[in-house]
Amino acid sequence: MPAAEQAPRDLIRHVAEREAQTERERGNYTYRQTVAVEELNAMGFRTGEYREVRDVIFSPAGKRTEQRMGPSRNTLTRLILTKEDFRDIREIQPFLFTPDQLRLYDIRFRGEETIEEGECYLLQVRPRQTLEGQRLFDGLFWIAKQDFSIVRSEGKAVPEILRTKSENLFPRFTTFRSLVDGKHWFPARTHADDVLPFRTGVQRIRLTILYSNYKRFTAESQIVFGEEVRGR
Image (tube, rainbow, N blue to C red; front, side, top):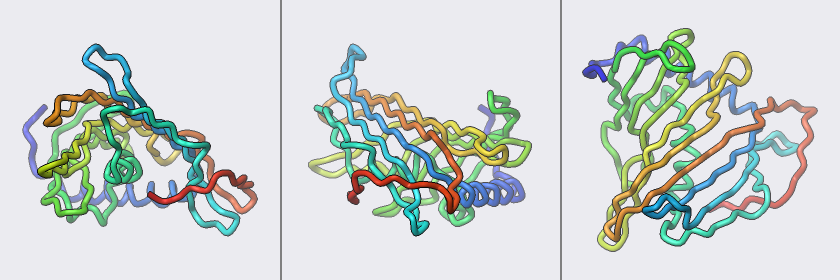
């Protein structure tokens, strides 16, 4: 990877403006989010799993909300999912790098690369500082040259939380986006397969998040309600 240099301001501005457009457009869509967190032993066999499916929908009044599709399943034996883990699933793995985020990050230009999604600029973003209660992204963005859309991100959620009697570590992940409406790239799949070095011993974790069934919401859309989602 080439040495990092200060990213051009015009490039940063174009990316942030494009992300704001993507955020606004995605806010008009319903979709399904399927989450699977697996713990694996040294032989690579699964020893437990957390799985849930949620639909992000609109109420008849047009309010954006979540609907859990059946009960979650949790057979994890070593890993404990925390409020930070669930917050990361909603905010960091599908991260949108909008203008309000710029002041929080140092942004470096890493050159150009051609990937499956096309010719891209490569940006490295790192938090300027991390304060208690924050959840931030530390990693790389692949920016489509054609329209400055982020088409792929790779990194991890920070900060890790280390206390005397507990620790909260987070895996590196890659989020792939797909062109949904012919204009905007929405998160489509997140994958992580990492080994976390807990003080009690290393633990391999595999995370998969699928974002599917994107449908633009209209006043004529029919919403069918099931089990109510209770906040964590």
